[in-house]
Every structure is written in C-alpha cells, then in structure tokens.
Image (cartoon, rainbow, N blue to C red):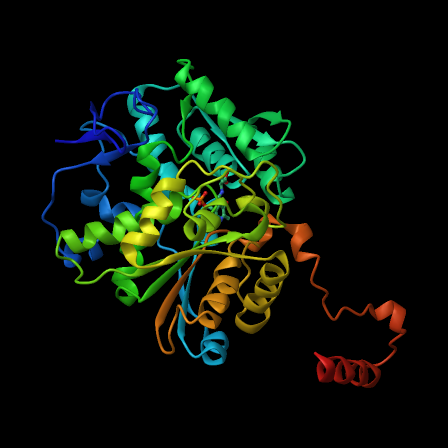
Length: 406
Ligand code: F0G
C-alpha cells in the first residue's frame, strides 16, 4: 500500500525504489494506507518525533536513524499578543539537535538512505539542510556531501559543516544553481542519495510539526511559516490534513507563507497569477534567499486550499521582528524565522487576520546560527575598565542610567 505518487501525472512507484522525481520530472509524494491510532497511544510514548511512528510511513524493515528530534517547545508570546491583539504561540524549532526544523525531515530521509544501502548523502543548501544532513549522515555512518552558495552561508552553519567534516562543494551563484546541480547529479544516476526537500520522505518527517501543534494547543486559526524552497509549509499543511482525515482533529488552519521581499517569487505569483523565478534573490535572511523554489506550485496550492495567503516582507521588517522576538519575548530565532512576526503584522494591517485569532509561528531556526545578524542589534554594553568603576556605588549609578534608557 505504501507508494510514491507523482503530483503531475499520478504515476505510481514502489516505496522501496531509490527515486526522487517522476520520469515526467514531477515531484513525488508518499501515499500510505490509513491507520487507526488514538492521541492516547501517541502521547504515551517517550520519543519525541517518533512517537508518531504510525503516521510516518517507512518501508517494512527500514531502520530508524534518529537523534531524538522533534518535541520542540510551543511558547506563548505574551507582550506581542497583547500589542497585536491576537493570541500568538511560537514553535521553537531551533531546539532540534542541529538547531533547525530540518532534523525532522532528515531523520526520515536518512532512515530511507540506510534502508537503500546508500554510502553518502548529498544536498544543496543555504546552510541548515547541510548542517542537519551532515549530522544525520554521520549518525548513520555515511559521508555528507553538501553544495552551498559560495560566501552566502551563515557562520554558525559553516561551523557545523566543519565540525561534522562534510565534503563541501562551493557553488558560484546562489542556492538555485546548487539545487540545479544536485538535481542533475541525481537524475544522472549519481550514487549519493539526495535529501533535499524534493525527497518525498523529508516531507513525512516535517509534517510532525502539525501533529505537535495540534496536540499541544489544538488547531489554531493561522499557522505562519517562512517560505524558501517551500517544502516546510507544504509538509505542515499535509500534516494537518492527515490529522483531520484520521478523525484526530476537526478543523484545519489557514496557512500564511512569508517570503523575503527580494526573494519572493511565490508571493508575487500569488497576486499576479504568473510565476517568474528571480535571477538574483536578495535578502538579509540567507536561509530563504531562493529565487526559484522547487515547491512553488505546491505552496500556491496550500495557500488557496487553506484559505490562507503568501506574502512578502522587507529586510527592515525582518530585522525589526528579529529584535522584537528577542527583546519582548526572550526568543532568539534566525532572521528567516522572524519573517513570521513581520508577516503577521502585515497581515493584520491588511485585515487578513482578525483580532483575537489564534496564531502559531513556526520559528524554523536558532539565533545562534547567525552571529553576524545578531551583531546588528546593539546591547547596552559598558566595560568596567573603561568606566573606571572603583566601587559598587559607582556601578549602581551607571546601571541606573543604563536601565532607565533601556
Ligand atoms: N527557515 C530556515 C531557518 C531555513 O533554513 C529554511 C530553509 C526555511 C525557513 C524555509 O524552508 O525551504 O522548506 O520553505 N532552508 C533550506 C536550507 C533552503 O538549505 O537549509 P523551506
């Protein structure tokens, strides 16, 4: 019953086949037989992501490669909710083993790679996929090969690649060029197993974000997701639909996808009805600096099907939101993750989102990935030596003046 089905021509392939795209070039998705499972059973387990194992289809006999990913915190945004007059919760995906949501998809894709007997994994990446894949490849005893845009990956992510000893191929241009190279390699029959989100098994892991949100807070009115290549918003929507089909929930959220203005071909297509890739995508949010997202059709469909939307926000708005999440809520997220708050603010001003609605942000990555972006925000730093503080009275005077202005 477990099979891979083409989005475009509906052709079916066995789940045990090492295949990423259909022969027609279309994207594949996993289809599994319906299961009978209750929240009680799912909740009774110790593992995080793999507590949902009945809902994460694997071919029989596939071993599970895991770092106990998933189970990320869902945190109430107290001040921002009050200020924007909605109810915001933030899903902190930066708590995953390598600091981003990618680990959810990678545990499944690496398990399949192990099942297929692959010796190496390969992916194009703006950094997080590469870091996650490298950790899971090592966990499974495989070689990680990553194609990254030269000079355009955040320092924290590059550090992770060094730590895991990845084979790094620096590609001239951007993510889109790296992605094209990996797809050509894969279609050409390359040995290393491709684990970009075109890999249908990645989606099966990432959809668990929906399971956790629904379990912990119920199905919200809106789920706000940063969009780069588009795999994650599609995965989360798939997860919510499956829960409803299984009778585990009784409603669906509206999905709000947010792109960065200089890298927003899907947001543009959503209003103009014409999709045009962007040759040189530009944004401070390097994780989502993508001009030709692989899942663009799926993302447009998610927005329409869910009654949601795909919008874009400027770099200034992203930087404001990055700072606001940290300073008003204590939440350190990646700049690309901060598009959620920037996008919600815009959606409220455009009257897309109503007062008192329940919103969940998917904060996709950890702030520590991007030291240089964190450095854009100044702290109220004072060095004791420069101040020549000689006693605690002097210190308390100085601190009084700082805290008054903070
Ligand atoms: N947020 C972060 C932190 C990301 O790293 C990415 C994607 C996204 C959001 C967007 O997710 O592509 O599924 O729409 N990063 C990929 C990478 C492209 O290579 O790490 P998406």
